[in-house]
Length: 445
Image 1 (tube, rainbow, N blue to C red):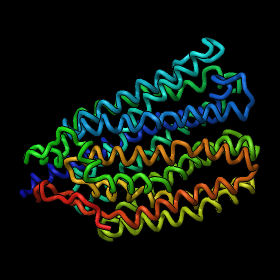
Image 2 (image 1 turned 180 degrees about the horizontal axis):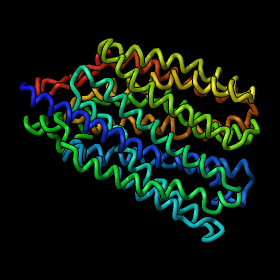
Image 3 (image 1 turned 45 degrees about the vertical axis):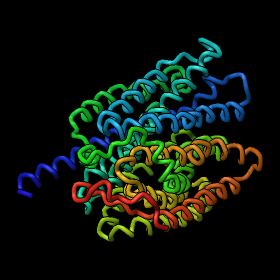
């Protein structure tokens, strides 16, 4: 390869990973502001005729319901991602998320239109979930497929750090709005973060239009390996990878959504902390995610392919213990110790999510990789992340103790560790150097 061709490839890699990360950041910004609003304000605006506890439970249920639409989005966008291409599919997912998020920001409340308010809220939340069903996994594999072998771990991790950027901007927006009076915040302040999404989405769509298609997908087309029904092949020959990927996401999904969604209502209603205090703690963790996740991805490249599996298993085991440490330190109600608890939890979490994009993507052949990744990711979020805040609220309400919630987080991490033991990378990214037909289709455990 000439020096100019190598330079062009490097620029393409950088553009692709930057666009994937920015798109992921926007998607998670949109998704995260809903979680914050569900914990802080939606129970009063959309479910006012019930008790605070029931209202919070119903509000968090609307947060969870988006995950019902994610498998549908995964099947639809996975199909088109493997049939038509990654680039166009990711453009559509981002556009849908933006429309739904701005729509929520314009939504009338229960006092204005009655029962139609929560109905419309649920509908727009379903659109968000449908979009994210194809976005998250697609952005990851687009970056991994466009990277050289020695950089794919870092690039995959960098895209995953976009979730941290999205969470950072979401919490900054809500932290700023929380400075308003309670009346102003509940009247119009909560809408501002949702409406700001319009600006971010326009920028993201412009960037994605300038991308080139994934070289892996181009190779699949070149050798005639595009499948008419990639989803069927996934369940015929790659069902084990899908199942292991789903269980593998339990540790990070449950820990993340309990930490960033449930902890807000827990800190305010149980620990007596202010909204600003809890939001600032979550905000500090986003900075940790943004810096630590790419660094661990870089280390995984230096240590070799098998290191990603070891890091994943080790971090899953660590999350079995950190949930108890985190809750114990929260009980002190001392800001410094509460922050330390978040740091301990998120170090293990960051190590876990840093390696999942590449570790999971390479379990599937390129011709069905989008479908396999999308279905595995969404099933994992449905059985884990989607119900995590709801389960935590119910367990806390039934037992009056945080111990059951910590045990739930620990059990999810155990399932992920077992899945990591059984799942292995076996499909090389370098499709142009190897025929797609030569790629294996079974997991070697």
